[in-house]
Length: 96
Figure 1 (tube, rainbow, N blue to C red):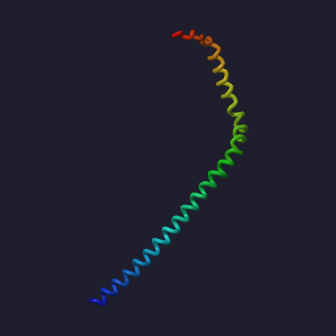
Figure 2: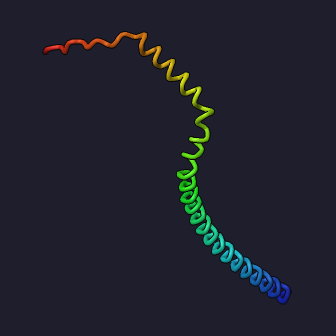
Figure 3: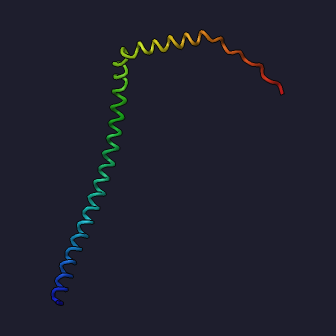
């Protein structure tokens, strides 16, 4: 009985040691992977932002023929509304 208990404690000790080593490896690789993930995200934001700065004006110019009628319609409506209202009169400043 004592031999079985010693054998069980030996097996459990080996198992716990292997588990601890596995946890250390898992934590180490998780931290390294998280660091690479953060660096990758920062580089992605940097290069994505640069690409957006380069591409956005080109896309805006490419969409200009599509958006020009809407822009002109808005400008005509704004001009009509602005011309239909008389200019605001300045109220005299109140003297205290």
